[in-house]
Image (cartoon, rainbow, N blue to C red; front, side, top):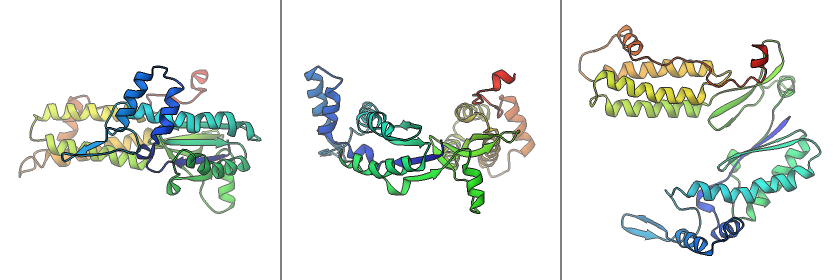
Length: 289
């Protein structure tokens, strides 16, 4: 793939059209009682401060059905459209990836990518949706993107998808390779959540229980982002979390309770996790091993 289209839908969960949603549900649900019940649920509205506000569009806020209904809506609006219309009109290879309202289209030729981007707005408008222009772009990405960017005096472009930053890289032998690292936004978000939890709980639990709780949260982050080529980001995350713990443990009293060596010793005692590859994305790793 040489060209990507990265896009997002503006206010998707609030803009889902109820009439179209019911038409799509009828393709899979034959029981009219279920459809009638769901239609009533769409019109139930939202209650805030004792007042009920009618909902003219969108999926029910806070409902466990909201992700399922939204996914079904975009399945008919985008997934089938790309598979049955867009891909057949392309001169070269074309692939489609979507998670909720974030999606990525990959093309072999630039003309196919431009044609898709031009038709995307009209397709969404037919279902009462709109593209978020500030989050939508076409970029060159692939084995030739690095050389082409350097010829223009620029750096090869990167893009974020599902919490990961994808970039053009090389193997140790100089062969093109897609590399991934934790996006800055996700890294800051994870650190902010951990800091908020420690700040609230540092006076409620003994030190050992507090460190074990922090370890469980950090282990969850490493399980999600401990993939090939992302070891440096995981090491940075571990370093920053240790600094957060050192700062807030010493704020439990007016005197400094822990030295840096003392914190490291306590983390070792509770079995602090280490940065390592938990999911190997190298397709030839097993053969080389």
